Image 1 (cartoon, rainbow, N blue to C red):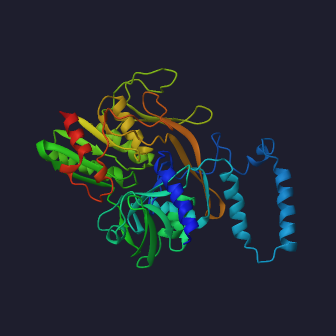
Image 2: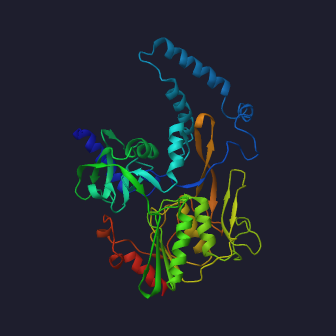
Image 3: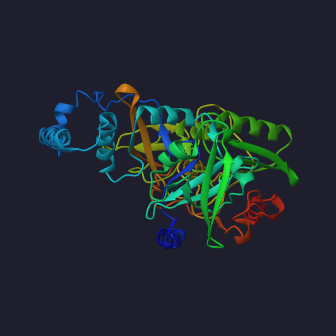
Length: 434
């Protein structure tokens, strides 16, 4: 590691520490954001990707010219390139480059191997080190936002707030976050991985070696606090989360819960079906929402939970329908890493006046990604729509402002486990319920 490269990284780190806009948030080994999973590669009119090719030729890209240029470049490679060409890699990077050219960090091409790993990631289990990370869109710097207790990362000494500099010998600043996680940090159980972090408060680089282990992420944890205040922490919205959340609600109700705090701090989002199911379990089915009729889409006497709009103004609308509701005062804890599905959850409860938001302004990711499976096991994840809170608020790049703004104490920001009695944001949330 050269002095020059360290200085360059440190300058970037100082800039990154001042920025709040992040390219994405990922638990190591898990996919995040709001996804509509399993959609075939078709457009809004049911047209297949292949049948749309002729139509695209009349669009902005001249596909004939592009094909001709690729053939010319390939001829030059065949004649002059010194080393052996891996044609499979070249083809994959043509597609990756095409989507990268859109300038959207959430729109990416997945190779067959990457797509298989992505599908595994929503199960709540993975083989890795047990930390959550985020990445600055401006600097590419990756920050540790959460470390799960008892995991290899925690035992090795990684702390929230550490800046991830290297994995093994590979510098990762500026690399695609998905690739850092899937190709470098994740791996076979029992294999070693060395992580180099920059600890901001000391300015020192620290190397830590740990063994990868099978990790089951506790997406939902709950307990009853004093005065019958139920507390539920949700780390992300995976396929298993809705059932775990409903089970937590049921258990707390059996214990006589009178108030409820839902903790979504550092929750980067997840699957839309999970957050919709959780909101449905909380809210009654017949709430009306007031708002600009040009913005709000709703069915009469139906509780609108979230709706989406694509480039043509069309999209899915989700309503409560399960007949279940919770009728206790609620508060939701949020911060700058509460993103996407977390903001859907918080925004719906805020719009209906069913919960007070406590903490700091949320991340501000109000766009939807859909997975489009392609041939040979590959896929595209593409941004296809905005989503809106029930009253029509588009929070993208804005975030949700808390009803009770309160910063977490500085000395708590690097702690792996914060005890309830010292958690000033939690204490404010409980106070807000009174």
